Every structure is written in structure tokens, then in C-alpha cells.
Length: 498
Ligand SMILES: [Zn+2]
Image (cartoon, rainbow, N blue to C red; front, top):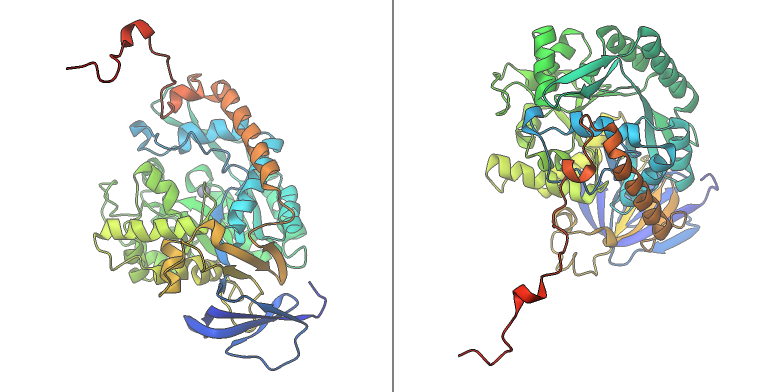
């Protein structure tokens, strides 16, 4: 918004950035002009056009989610939970992902994107990275219309996975022409859309997965990211099968392979890097993957919820951080909620290390803000300080979930609910107010994603490798009610038993 107006938000609690770290500023103000914060401190004496009294709200920087697939999730909700196949080391990539992509129409993808937007905003996310098979132009336009800051990237790849007998994962390799078409389209998207819509929409290069990209494609992708000065993101270390496929092909771990290609650098965001040498599921020694990552400055997009559902954990968040690995948080699947993702990251770290002293509120909040922003090379995001973008979130504290409040950050990380998000400002524009996003009608969005879900479940059988209906692949939690046979269930009237 370039109306030149200066807005001052006064609040009792502000998570302010002092140039080095987040600190708690009591009784202060955040002042922004157009899309940029011009002052954060106890008071501001300059001219102000709009004064906002946020009262007892907690004012915090917007979250930066550095990994998601908005057109695909939450569409896969309600059947991916509680299921997994030991044949594929519990990863659902191989049996679930192919059919769900094939069965998803543009309309279904749209419904999923809108539902994601609402969930993201209601969890304080102001920047999202979306790696997508959906029409990227449309995704970018939809994000701009809602006012969400987004990094959008169409996937490039050389192959897709296929399961044909329930035992093995096959790679269906594209022709070089098909691969080149995907690559050209992705680069053209960067050229056309990076830094569009007043800087709200940016782009990156996204080779889909390390095991589905030929080496020349990886090299070209990295060269393109460098040439166009955009980030690059790839899934790596996300499955046991992928880890061993790379070891088989190259004699190196996924991280070792990227390092040997010279591709580990600060421009790179690796999702999810769970399976590095030394992980307890691998029976492969720790041969220095974390040190390679730390030295390179490449960042890891940590998405603990989706892996927790598989029974898989990063080993561990404090270990990666202590090794010096740059880390940020992403939502990947569902919920597209940074509040829940931070909580999961904290709890997973405590479970894995068997101590409450790690995975602190401070640790995961840093990841969800500064960590993600730094991974994108954006020192102007994820923090409230003069010169940063005006991406600001106000959380109510007068709610049962947020009270009693002594340590605002702990309450935010461990107890806040989406309903506590009172106001979201992105690029100086108020996108959510009083808990509502004017441009997104929840009733319509819920109906849209319900319809999309029903279409997906109905179409599943067509794309499943053995033609299983969705209820066979993912049996419902509750068996359907069957009326009892009245003759078999004669009950003595109360008081007649001796
Ligand atoms: Zn992903």
C-alpha cells in the first residue's frame, strides 16, 4: 500500500527485534508507513495518520512458513492419518501422493489453496513458500488477491514414483524433452513473476525431489537459481527409500551427493533432511552430513507434523541447531497452521532428546520467524524492527487459551489457538481483522474443500496401484452403526433384577 500513511499500533506486549534477537517490549508501539516498519520502541513522537490501540493483544512478527503444497493439502486430510505401509518404511509418498496428484483437478486444487490461505492467516503466517503442481500463475494471483506474501514455484522433475505391485517403487522417467519443458516453464515463471504484485509475490526454483531429478537437471536448476538470484528448494532426506536409492546410485548420502555436486549453498532450502547419516532408522553411519550442512549455509525446512504422523522424527532439532544448521519451519501438509507446527516441533524435540529443556518456545519461535526469513535471504521478514516489512500479527490475550499469561511466548507456542489471532497485517495491509478475512468466506471455503474431498475419495480407486477403494487403503476410525437385533438384546426393566 503506497498511500504514504503512517500507522502506529500501541500494545502492552510486543515481541520486538533489537537487531540481534527477539525481546519482549512492554507498553510500546510499532509504527509502519506503507509496507515498511519505521519504528519499534516504547513511544513514537513523529506524525501519525492512523492510531491503533491493540490494548492487551500480543503484537508479534508474522510467521514465515518455508515449505508447503497448498493445492494438495488440506485436501489429503481425513485419510492420510493413522496409515502407512512398512513396505515403504511408513512413508506415504509412494502409495498416496501419486493418486492424490492424479485425481486432483484444478477446481479441487483451488479449493485446497483457499482453505490453506485461511488456515495460514489464522495461525499468524504472513509468508508462505508453495511448491506446486497447480497452475502457478493462478496461485500467485490468488495469494496476491488475499494479500498473503507468497513464494510460488512450479515443480520441475525428471521422474515420478509409481508403485505397481505393492512392493517396489519404480521411477517413471520423463523424456529429456518433457523434462526441459518443465524446466523452461519454471524459469519463465521466475522471470515473469518474481517480485510481482508490489513485491508481495516472489518465486523460487523447485526441483521436486532429489531422487526424481537427473543430475544435469539438478545442475541446471541451481544455475538458474543463481542467475535469477532466487532461492531453490528440493526434498531430500525425506524417506528411507530415497536415502538408500541415492546411496545406491551415487555411493553417497543425499547430503553428501549434493555436496559433491557443489550444490549445498545458502540459496538452498532442503525439505526435510530427516534422514541423514546416523538416523536410527537407517543403519548407516553418521559420516558428517550435519557438518556439511552447517558449513554450507543451506537451510532445512523442518515440518514435524507430517513426519510425526508416520512415527518418524528428526534426530533431533537441538542437535541440528547445535551443529550450526540453518533451520526454518514449514507446514508441508495439514494443518497449514504454524501454531500447531511450532508446538509439534517443540514436543518432538523433547520426546527425541527425552528432556523438557530443549525445543523451547524461544527455539521454535525463532525458527518460525527469523529462521524461515533467513532461509529465504530476507532479513526484512520475521522480525519487528525498523526497515522490516510491515508483516504484523496481533494475538488476543484475554482468552481462556492465552490466560493466565506470564510468559507471552510460551503461551503463544504451547497454548494459542487460531481463534486468538485478532489481526494480521501483511505488507502494511490489514488482511485479517477481528479474526476474519473479509475476502475469504469460511462457509464457502469449507463447502468447496468438502466437495473436493468427496471427489478425491470417489476417484481414488481409479488411481490406486491395486484399485483399492479409499476405505480399504485407509479404513475409517469407526465402524458404521448397525442396529442391534431387538430379540437378541432384551433388557430387563430397571429394578426387576435381584
Ligand atoms: Zn513437501
